[in-house]
Each structure stands twice: as structure tokens, then as C-alpha cells.
Image (cartoon, rainbow, N blue to C red):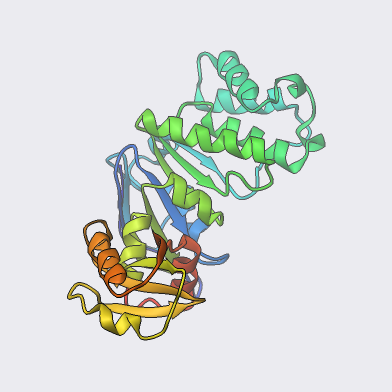
Length: 305
């Protein structure tokens, strides 16, 4: 659905995006993660045909960038960092204006659908400039969805939203995925990306790594079992003597054991600990957060990734 090859954008001497290679399938929720200034918004602007790349190529739904940009813009919806609404127009008039640009036949029905979805129907005649940040964000989302795009570029879609509205957006993303719409999600909310995205890319001008969140964490950190013991004692780890253990260490009185396949190896590990006289209270897998992976990669600790 979205393909980029060597996509590059320079602004004078500044390289904002450097030789980006990507392929995103139809119906995929793809997270694009990186710090401020990494080039995420520039990437979105190129892929949505708002600005031209300096070099490289990309195609959106099979249409190459630069060949029929009008067609690409009709097929995508974009939520930018700033809502970009007409503040002196009402919420309703904002949507009607954009509906005319998109040539939507059932514009009023579509506007009503999304204003009600984002709980803005009662404020439809209010000026956009009088709305709170969260309300403007919801109105901008309604505008991006108005023409039912195949591909949706979302730049911080839950920024400024209260928890209930943020959940509405997350539920919407999951429902759009079930309709096989493709979503390109830029976010600083790493927990949100971990839950919503089929795959993520960590990006800082250049692509650092790409893959599904769990596989990336396992690739960089491996899998570790945490064993809670009633009588932790140093030296027991040396007596374990099991061939599948790659590393053991004590952390805050708990034994951390690195394994390749905890599902099949944990029972043997527990039996061996009991044979050695250990009182095992419980066993669980050490969960590495996406935040840990993100920070290590952004700080340059990504050789193992």
C-alpha cells in the first residue's frame, strides 16, 4: 500500500529524511516513532504528496509520487501536528468546506456521523477558534476521516485529548484496521504504539530499525525469566547447570535467568531449583517496555538491534 525507496528530503544543507526504505501493507497499523526534529512530519508530508522529495521514490496505493498527486490526496487523510482549521468558521462550516474540496456527495451525513462520533454535534455551530485544544483535535480528526480515506496519516492523534476521547480515537484506529484501511501513526505515546501497531519503525533522520514491537524487544534483549525465591541465596545460580541457560544474575533479590524458549524451559528450571532446595514463590517473564527499546536506540545503543 505504501512503498518508499531511498526517499530523501533536504532543506538547503539540512538533511531531514535520509534514504528511507519502507513497505507498509494494506490494513496495517504502522507506528513511526522518533524524537522531535527526527523528520517524521517531513516524511508524512512527502508520502501524502504535500511536498516533493529531493531524491528517491515512493508509491501510495500503487500510484507513484509525482505522477498523479491529486489522486493520492483524494485517497489519503492527514492529521497534522497542528489542526489547521479555519478558526472563524463553525465546526460544521469547516467540515462542509473540506467536503466540497473532496467532492463528497453525502457531505452532511458524513459531517454528522463524525461530529457525533467525537461528541461535537452539540457544538457544531460554535466557532472553531473558541474550541479547546482537545476539541480542535477531534474536529481535525473528523475532517481527516470525512471522505473515508484508504490511507490515514495521523500525527499525534491523541495529543491534548482527555482519557475518554483518547480511547475513542484508539478504538477508531482498531475499527479502521478491521476495514483494511492503512494507518501511518506518528506518536510519542509509546504504550499506545505498543498496543495498536502491527509494526513500528524507530527513526531519527535515518531508519534505525523496523519490526513488530515484541520481536524487536526480544531481538535486542532476549527473553528472561524472573524467579522469586523465599530464601534467595547467592551461588544457587552456579549450581543450576542447565544447557539452555545463557545468563543468570541477581536483581533486587530476584533471580533473572536468560532463556531462549521460556514456555518449554521454565518447568525444567523450576524443577532444578526445587532439587537445589530453593523455595520458589512464583515465576514470571521479565517484560521489557517499548520505552526501554526506544531510549536505547535513540541514545545510540542499537548495535545489537
